[in-house]
Amino acid sequence: MACTTRFSSNLRPVFKSDLPQIVRWINDPEVRNFLNAHLPQSEQDEERWLENLSKNKDTDLVLVIETTEGRVIGLMGLHKINWRDRVAITGALIGEKEYWGKGFGSDAKITLLNYAFNVLNLRKICSGVISYNKRSLQYSIKCGYKEEGILKEHIFRNGQYWDVIQLAIFREDFISVWEEYQQGA
Image (cartoon, rainbow, N blue to C red; front, side, top):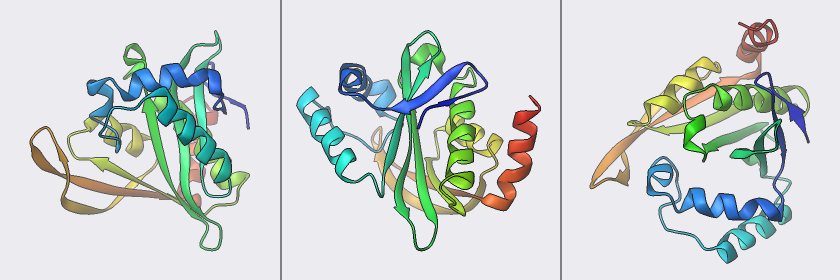
């Protein structure tokens, strides 16, 4: 899959040549603070991750967010795709911090959701946001997600336990988000 987003970026498969940037992001404590990953990773660790990704392509789809100038700025993915129930979990990472808060995550997420709903025929996409990650919560809501529940004191970061806000979007709710997106709203 390679898709062009409205902000002149692309979603494309992860290549082995992307691993140095991914390792840099994962090992940046400021970036890692917002991820499920909590331990530093080596390039060999990420090579194994990429190999496992290709083995699990029926249940996981991870794509690189790349600017039209060819700069790799992040990752966007569908995980634990359940083909019988037609649901998946989504995750995102903008590793290049100068792109934080500029709309690239929202743009890539909406493009991925369109693919999930209108190509893969999924019906529900879920996401979990650590309660202190206000930027992720804000862009998820902008993309049409709605809160489904809270996992109380579910994740340990920065010396304390934090809630995880469970969000989801259904295909029928995404239709209006997609129409607004296409109109440039």
